[in-house]
Length: 364
Image 1 (cartoon, rainbow, N blue to C red):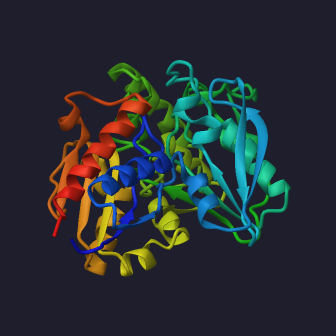
Image 2: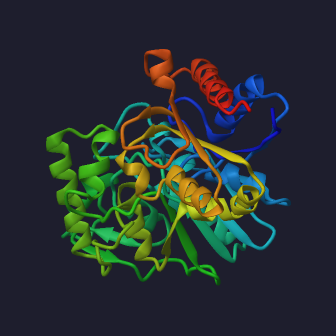
């Protein structure tokens, strides 16, 4: 049996394992079948949960800070941000106003104000550049809450501040951006995992609203709120990525930020290309491999990079719901276990079993 250098580059398995836990489970399973192989673990992210952790692992000298902010439902939460040695700050929406911070879905009222509070803290601490991960949101407020925390005023026809969330957008009559804090000297980059516009059948409300507890009628109402907000802000709502994080991409574009695929930024930080250049096989994975995966998700990027490097790639996913052409092997943990895995312990076990099965097929 020849010794292989195996690069493990998974995203998180949402609802059960973060990317580091997924990589550990894959490593344990692969090593059971092929104990002599060299394992290189590079947990990834695409702008959602785990983005800050990925940068912290990849960049020596990073310093984690925490600030208490208003969470998506108004309750205080402890939200981290990361200071990199070059003066860049990494901020993650999921940890300040993400869906996982809600005790129950609040599609109309959840707000991104906490994200703006964290951004303000990082800029106030002297950050010269910001990287803002926009995945994992629990809101559909178009980024209005974040803009308000950064100094914008969104008022109704009487000149009174509108309420939080998308519900507040339905009464908006004017958006005043003159009070926004200045961008850091080297700008703000929004790390996004989708290329959805703000509005329409592929937009923030229609595609992602149901994931946040919105019914069909709720989606129509959320769309109306976003349409009203868009009519008051000088940003093209059709911009690819403007619909990221319930439209938070749109709102922060109005501040002067720019968009970048989050998976690309994280892959660069962890030097994935360098690892692939010296690898014999790469194993990637996520909770659900589906049609959205190709729209900027981590697994699609890993596959393109592996193809470019001439390295065979194995997919281990919770479920596989899209064509899996191009992979050397594909294993679904749901098919192995017979049900959807939500428990961390069960997910780790079956992910390890899937990796062991895939590794066994590489026996020489």
